[in-house]
Length: 385
Image (cartoon, rainbow, N blue to C red; front, side, top):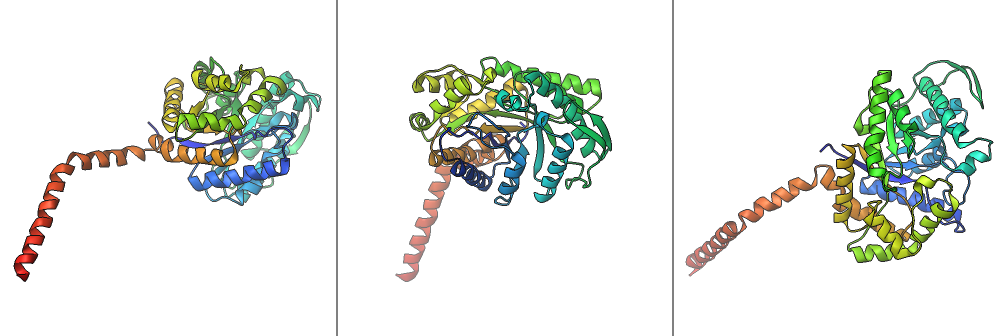
């Protein structure tokens, strides 16, 4: 197995009615925490309505978070590219590339909340069509081209970036896929990365994973581009604790609010899950394979299952969900880093093998050790008597 990268997908989610200032600063604090734990990536979303996903600009947030961290990479996860002038999006990403000294991944999508698009007069069909148009422009601009183009919402006349990217060869790019083939098709067309959001949240999502990558490969062949599974990220929910009983108890803090948001507020049915009572919600997450509420062992099994079903990918992202309180959420991240990540990054097995080798010869060596102690003791008394 190739070395998997691990990270978090932070939309973010916060229960409507809570203090938004504290919530945003708690997100910054959490990112500092996972940076210290050695996580590879954090993806930050863009939303403008519905009251729970309150990050309106991933670029601004990344600029703040980057100053607090040392190693973790930041992805716009994702910029709702259909809402923006593609020239300014490309320009802001290059600025971030310089400010973070190359720790940025440019992630794009059409915009997931219909209430966002509605405020600027766009339908869901509009946003998908504009994503394709605007992504083509962004890619060309980041490649150093001069672009003249007229879209439904903007016009570019001899548009060109004034800065070259900081990252040698250009910054990595990715496009989001949820349920439609749009994202996978564009990833293949442009030879860029793919992020499958909510990749386990529907009953048929496991089969959709291989479907997504198949489309990307098909389009890469058609457009003569190159794609690599190492640039494919999957996102799904986890909360782990020392015991399953403890994990189930901890998520009672906020799992109901998360379910109700998707059931009653956010109008994207592909992420809506059934469940009325908290115990039923927990069972649905675990039994349908949608995520993990349990132990590190169960989390390892989920990651392995995703790997096997998809055929392999590059990064496993945990969805930030506020199911548990901040302390328990941080502890879950710690347990995942300590007990799950090493099994997929080649660090667990060498220590297990070393322990097994030592155990196999322990009895014989312990006997010889005792004999050496006895010999030294007898020698001492012989010399001093």
